[in-house]
Length: 398
Image (cartoon, rainbow, N blue to C red; front, top):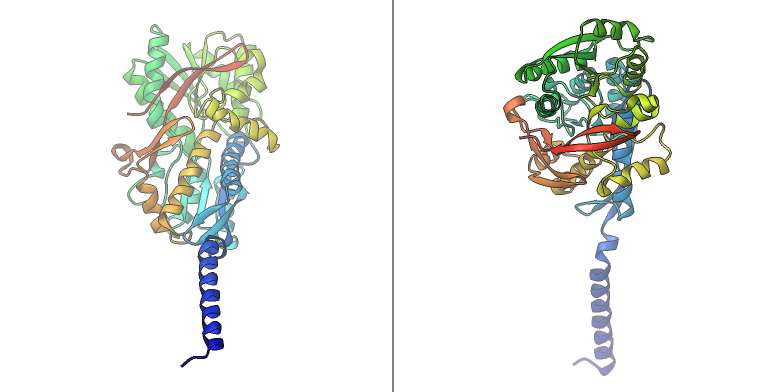
């Protein structure tokens, strides 16, 4: 038989053990979750003509990261990750983009590359990412060659000519029923050539004749291109996928040469940059944008861009960039891994409908690309009036 003292010791031991179990159970969420850093690469032009789009991509991602980090980080399984962007400047050039992608993959050991602006840059980057099962989520690559069943690790977070041209040309026909010819000014590379191909197709569907006027990137004086376009006796002057800096030069040259007919901008968000670069010359321009900063749910992006002191001014590419980043984070959590890109890919594919900051977002595109890796989101057609961008109509791709 146990003595009274032995019984007392046994009871004390049991109580102590129970107390420790209850304590550990109560604090398990704090002690079992290991904290680490999750790096996501960014290959985008942070200098040169496409700089506005590059910083819009980077800032959209980093602001989304800030929001997640401030909320406690990204919890994946039992690990909490602090999110960090690893940006590399592509200078809007394919060969530089390849070098940047290689550094991110092999030096930084990153398995997800967010961004890419420009078709040549995107395709060059993809030549490295796909064989290595690196996830690539561009926010500004328009070429239809980017997506396909043979490129399962690429997802596009931005609408392209294929998605928005039909709506834009339909709107043009309603707005200018007597117009016949459209001059399309485009950079003479993969991005511009592909865009002009789709412009001719959809313009023809609406009874327009689209005439192409290519120009070489880096051209210091774009006046000769404008002169040729003016001699074609066109009704609409479309700046197409021209980057904001060059688009501003085109607008000012056109106005200086006396063009008072319609200017339109159908590829790549640029309204805010055109207002800054062209002043009154920008009034009346019809444009396509990836978002609307005047809407309450998106206004914070422009404010945060200014607060964080990024170069230039906020560009609405930030909208799909922010939504795309949040979709990516959500998919990583759902996959339960930061290393297995196949599982993350499968989680991305199962997105369903996501309520973005400017409306519903889902995957589509199989009819055009053979795979549903193209984002479908609301698109905004707007007009610059009295120095301010104003949304005229919002539509959703079919």
